[in-house]
Length: 397
Image (cartoon, rainbow, N blue to C red; front, side, top):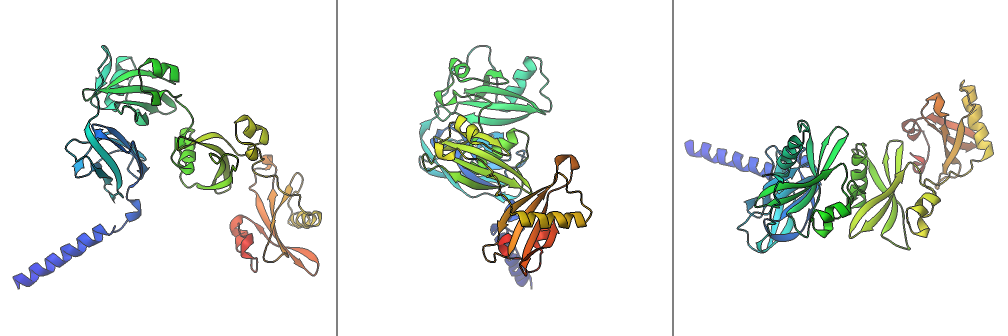
């Protein structure tokens, strides 16, 4: 009887382990690693692990490099900076992030022989074991209460990972810090509301840190660049979808993309520099003159969004008459043609735009040609229109 119970207990344990290994409940919330920067280096190298769902604070989170746990330098929901531990073989080593939601996918970091160089500390510089501690100590030394500040990585040098630029934020107040690591301790070398290439060069920073901060938002993919740009400018990028408007054929390193959330659309001019996408300009609309002034190739000097085609006069009158019959004041109301069904030309979709001072949401109208007469088949929000009986699927909003 005891033997049977023990066998049952072992089976239950095995099933539980299998459920956990396969993801279990909430597997979609597991962290996801997208890239490493840099992708190779010796022990002691600082690596920025970029991705999603790491957690806004470290908590119980850890980062594995091979079979070892890496020392965490900084932790945000999308970027974790770690130090490559010693004792690993000079070979590709898997990097994973583990938090209370599970373990991420693996991305390889190639460990090379030796250790990262340690620069000398300059006298009088504030130093600490972590960048956050160094920045907090520096602020306190200079009369600023560091309470309530959050810290994040701006850029880690790939030329010498002992140098980096971080930022401290509290509300709308942002301060940038140039830091270097000296004998295992982080040191504040320079700080300011902004830092210029000349300042950073004069501070002795490596050449890949001679940048403007704050500068243009960059990332490895256009979507990441747009999301980072929105977040930097106070817009929560959650829930946005991203799509291509036009890719330059003159220079494929330039493109126009868009970000959509509900009825809100923002257009972005992006440029790829050294494999990294950068937001050059953005707006609810972009004009040819603006794009030309931004340095975009000539085939991107376009109007976005494109001006809507002039609506057929007869259909506009039908919609205006319909609105008037419902008691709607049509003064100042614009009726814009959106499209004709490609599967049945007797169906057309229009948008009704009210003057801003009316504070009324835009509506849609779908028309059907019946006995050579246009008839309003439905009117209302996008959700209302999508439920129109008999309407072709390609007119759904």
